[in-house]
Length: 104
Image 1 (tube, rainbow, N blue to C red):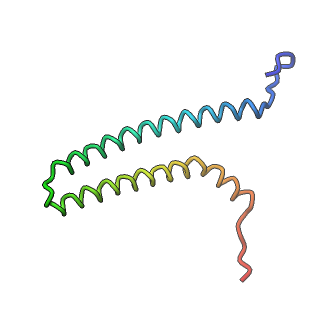
Image 2 (cartoon, helix red, strand yellow; image 1 turned 90 degrees about the vertical axis):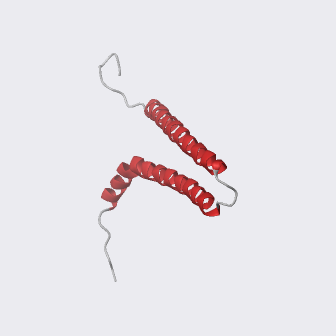
Image 3 (tube, rainbow, N blue to C red; image 1 turned 180 degrees about the vertical axis):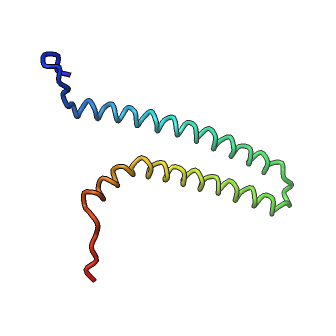
């Protein structure tokens, strides 16, 4: 804010720094949450796997595939979050370009 005139001044560098700090905070919190939850669930699966008998191949294979699926779910949630954060920019770009025309 300009203290002489009382008008708000646009400060892109400062605004960018604030946005970056907010984004870094959100990313850190998400990674901490998902990282902790993912590692706890994975540990539980591994402990369960260790408790199985060596000849229980189907049970061990099931636990292995469950752990792999957990990684896929985590990856998909992160993709959805990233897309959700970028959707407003994608919508702005689509609105500026206008509807596409087929010339076939």
